[in-house]
Image (cartoon, rainbow, N blue to C red; front, side, top):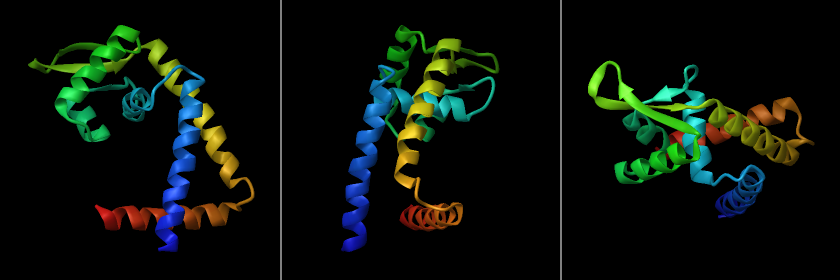
Length: 138
């Protein structure tokens, strides 16, 4: 019980820090999630909507809405897939890349504050334990 209670409290703290980091850049958490998925894909920061679904774990209708809103914001483009005439590709724009990078820097700074007193070895141990917990829950 004490493990799950602490994880729950920590999740609330992390969620609050995420909101603070994102609001500093006028971003919602869902916007960051989509932009970060594209960022993680590497240059040219382009994925199909289906790949974005798998990365963000939302429904296709939700993803369509999110892509539309990010296109309107100028953070991503949606273009025809050159390899599949029926498909599309979503890509970060230069503005979208700058936005996700700035938000990520803010988020990392806020999250690092939680671990400032931890040694690199302690951080590695925590990362390993969390990885095991996550893999066991899938």
